[in-house]
Amino acid sequence: MPHYRVLLAYDGTDFLGWQSQARGRTVQGALEEALALLSGETRIAVAAAGRTDSGVHALGQVVCFVLARHWEPEGLVRALNGTLPRDVRALVASLVAPDFHARRSALSKLYRYELDTAAIQLPTRRRYAAHAPFTLDRERVAAAAALFVGRHDFASLASAGSDVKTTERTVTRSHATFSGETLVYEVEADGFLRKMVRSMVGGLLAAGRGTVGVETLREALLARDRRTWPAPAPACGLCLVSVRYPGDDAR
Amino acid sequence: MPHYRVLLAYDGTDFLGWQSQARGRTVQGALEEALALLSGETRIAVAAAGRTDSGVHALGQVVCFVLARHWEPEGLVRALNGTLPRDVRALVASLVAPDFHARRSALSKLYRYELDTAAIQLPTRRRYAAHAPFTLDRERVAAAAALFVGRHDFASLASAGSDVKTTERTVTRSHATFSGETLVYEVEADGFLRKMVRSMVGGLLAAGRGTVGVETLREALLARDRRTWPAPAPACGLCLVSVRYPGDDAR
Image (cartoon, rainbow over all chains, first blue to last red):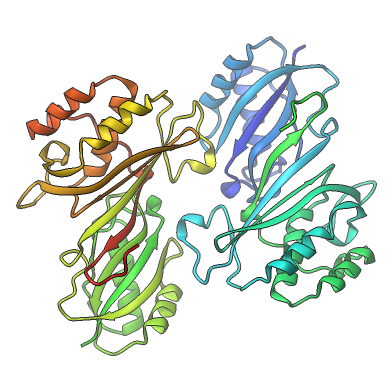
């Protein structure tokens, strides 16, 4: 049976996140429903590279699934976009080897977080950027971002209920820039714990405001205790930008 | 009694436009309601520089009104933002001379229109950009945009029911650029007829796709007959960016 990989974009505002739940609208639910409808199969299980939380967006989520009959990838994209709700779009589909798995095969994921620091946030930014009306010290924000680079135990930055074997992850990029009064934070790692990026941004914000020193943050990271870490930033500013796999072209 | 000028931004998606109506949510209605609530006055009439249509956004709408008692401009902004719905924000307030009128005193208004031409539009762009999945000839788009510059009778580009003395307007800027696959059109004029910018974009799109030649568009503009002009583009791509008044600093 043919295995498919699909690049997916969505506006997470009106979803309770990626993962199917007993009640409520999820991206996985919407996608599985669309696939069932267009394939006639009763149950198609879809796996995603990143199980994004409620309100988190995606420009480059990657999902995989198996269909009983063969579809031309372009036809599959068209059929999906004819069936999916308007806040989810399939961008590209391809046939993949049976051992491809959207999450397990991923080498790294890149997330972006946007945070508006102006006194008043523009209403057209509300869905896609968090708002924290504080003057941030850019050097301290940069110093806090640099704390994450390398292999660390990120237990302090994981939300409760993370069900993982290890809380160690390798961060290959952690970079904060400012575009006007907007903080744009990009972080790439081989994997992320639940709410890890939002916790990272919570740390940047605390450091930038000066409520927590960068050295204290470093100690809180080493403490591997989530009670020591600043609260996570809101979901709306977060977006899964891209996922890298072996054999993919370099970005 | 003190006269106020307020700079307003809104997400037009969930409004039936600026102007109050018997039924339905309007920006004017929301603002007048907020002013009544915070001032205790029963009826405050607000005028706006541009009476934006349903679904049109604003980054720099200008409104004016009179209050019975004096408010510090900064306190007025805070009070308004504590009372207005979240998709409307007051950005700046100032006291103005009694003869200031948001629309009549305006020298010019600048609108921006965004149109995504990629085959598939990203869901996070849906609220703030139109979508036309066509390859546009950039030279023809630029040539069509140049048609509007100067003083013209824009009757061909006005929607029915425009109640105006003259359909002549002076366009001082009309410039189309491409940011990736997004057409960004900026137009500044001393005034706009109803649906005029959206009709302009309809013309750019027709010229860019090649369904209407630039010379035919020029004739359609001269014809002063709206039946000769291509259909207006959707409201969601349009945004009132700024309004210029005598004595304001140059942008």
